[in-house]
Length: 214
Image (cartoon, rainbow, N blue to C red; front, side, top):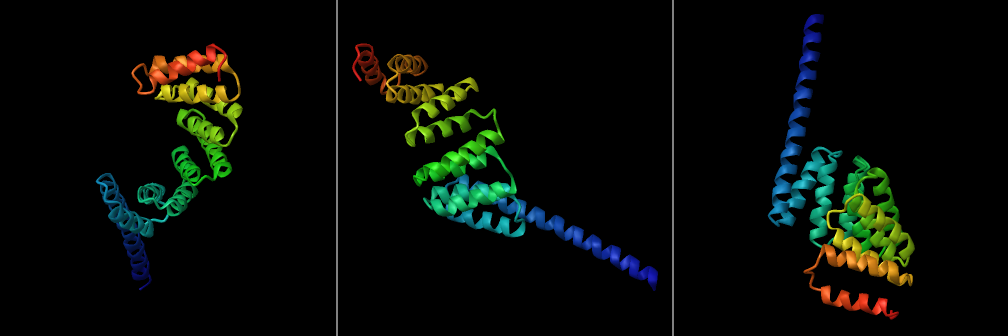
């Protein structure tokens, strides 16, 4: 009788273990379905799938993150921020932090956005996008000198679209009255994007800065 009890307990544990595996698989399936729906632009259906995945596996960080993406595409910034925070709670990831920072920036909560972007640079010190986003938030928050430091860091880390960095760097230098540095940044922008739609305008700005005009 005692042996039967031991066998029963072991069988019960096996059943529970199998149930957990099925639950995890089901959560993964919901996540995959939600991701496919999100890519197809079906955000409402994607939200439902991600919420189901989270219900089954609350610590599935990727599901929280993609839920935030879906909410953001719908323009529901408060829900998006909440979902991103949950993703960060599950996993401190630079991409998750940057997404939260960008939502906060859209909501004009610049000090909060800057703090989150700073966390992103610490989570991954080699991510140029984190420094670029941090620089943009600082520039928008009337701190061009601080922004310059972060733009330079993004360039050193080989930001994939250097023209964007040079353009914003030129603006930051110009706001500080550092015309020579601004000219150099704008010229680097023109080299990186010679066919940009605003190329002629930037050349006029450069000519004005060289002649002493602001």
